Length: 113
Image (tube, rainbow, N blue to C red; front, side, top):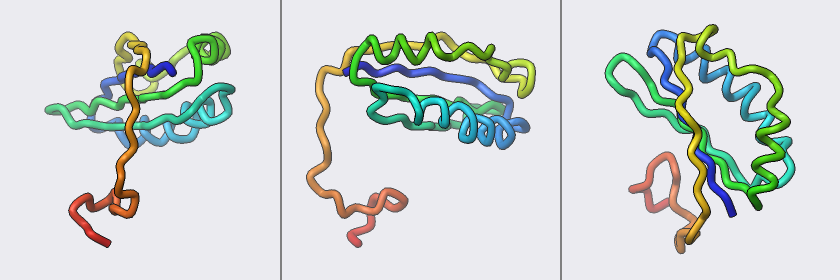
């Protein structure tokens, strides 16, 4: 399996608009992609900016490449939201483990319910 990480740095005042765009448009593109195993949209504050990171897991390099070729629309985040997209990084998955306790509440990792 293949992991791709893309990262976009967004000025904090534009975060909500950018995040809404990413959730409604970019995530929909991922969701309909052949060969996608899963995708996560993460965010991390950094001074007056927020890093928005997309981590996607693919069945194969070919599936990822096919998805990337299908992305014909030009990325407009820099113009529309003052965002800067960093270069994507691709990794080969070496090990994947799943937690033994699946009853833990993700919103509250300390919860025993």
